[in-house]
Length: 161
Image (cartoon, rainbow, N blue to C red; front, side, top):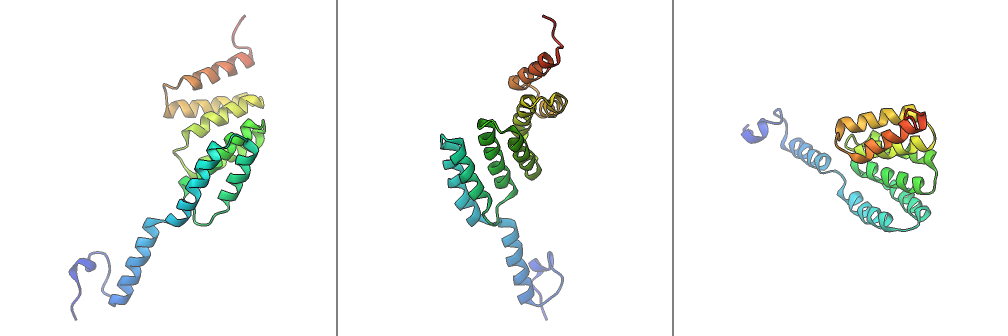
């Protein structure tokens, strides 16, 4: 019984049918669910262009119900919904979505900045300061972050008039 040497590198000796099933499963896992991503991407684009934040929230709610979304897509959907909540002055729901976005993607540094701004709005200044410090470690030259830090200092009374 001979085996294909190129497959022997990846698989122990086993029947060819099992090797093919394993290859198909690996390809499926590596490629992800592109169908779900293709249906969500246009919704995300339309939602970000919609002028009414309540309509955007509804569109993003529907998109979050899709099956097989990647973590990066879920993070983007939560982030955009958080921005819409923030525009409706609902910082508490925005904070929940920003935390969800960051839990699905570690590359969501912009969520830290939005979170800090919401925390300042609801007077959780210590938490806002921590979020900004984390953000500045990732993106040290961002002027908006330093402006928000100044807002925190001003609210805390750190600046003398």
